[in-house]
Image (tube, rainbow, N blue to C red; front, side):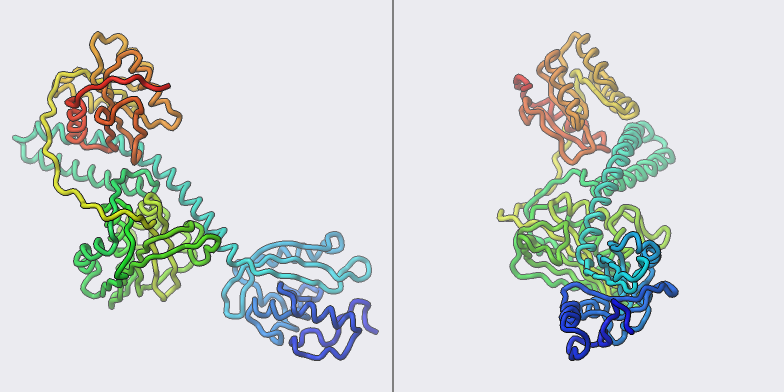
Length: 540
């Protein structure tokens, strides 16, 4: 005699079989299970070496798992498990099934070809006597695409968090570098008669400049690096760089340009775009085998439509873009490597062969330019990096060339220097005093205001960081203006751009990014002091 909830003997056959046994109700149920959009399996209740015996699998589940029904029915469900699976969770629930008859969860299963897919499931009991299930029915829904988007979003958020940390470290490091490089400039004038000392000083200064370049890469990743965006055409830039890129690729490798004949323009910092291209080509070159390979650079226009982000990822909002694709025929990467690829100091190269900042710099520059960068790769199949830059309708701008001559920076004006870092403040005050200026230096806002109040002469120039996120910098400038109106402002900060002082004309304020060279600080300062003075009332 069959048990009350026994299944028809035909369960597990293909959808095309004829249901000749069982009741009409059972036949209709079986057909419904076979045609469901969700994957369905029915298993036994006996746990055996990490799984349950499969009695039935519908067509959707078979397609999901890559098995024909004949290869699933009768086998243990552990064939669907792999390194990322958590079969123990199902086992724990099974022991409590008499009390909790539904089990919901999500996790990884494995197809016949060994690839993983992410599914949401719901296990239910077909009850027997004493509350112990006779059969288990599980419904599965493939959530792989949604899981991938969630992972990409989490990865993007993690990169933002790391970027904030990197920016904070670079901020403090820049203050130290300003002191090191600044004193090198001061001392270089005093050791001209000692060639050995001058060479050693130049080595110190060279190391300081390299360290400053390192912090610029960190700031680029954290999107705080100063940029000078221009409207350019990607094709023109790549053609200009092509010879350099071919030399960079190396004699054993081939570099090909596949540029769309007509593409839109983009607004980016030309120097930083060159850094993006160079870093991507270097990364591609290092992935190629010793026998040689091919690096291909492509450009094209792209449109990401509203409501359809498939293939673009969560970091690419709808809109019109110009794309730069850098593709290589190298070793490729697995999914785990790709998840950390844009994080600073992450590298797959041997110790001493890379800083781990190349791709993080690319990420920061592209994001700061309003774009996005994605990567697709498989082991032994090469990698493809795609940079999305927003298309603009403006014509290409002519790029400036050459440098303005440095003016004579000596003077006699009064300068209020408000610098929280004592080392930076001491260095700047020292060089300004040596150049003839009267310097009032303080590292606290209250002290700076007190010094200005007690000083009998006007303040000609304020040197300070006014970019405080809470607005304290601008508030300090307003309080100073109430005491001593008529000063100019030179804002020193680590940020890419400083919020302008609304009640000062543009000619009476300037911004310089740390770590700054002393000669640049002196040039900006002298230029401000030589500008015609206009006094306005500060808006509260």
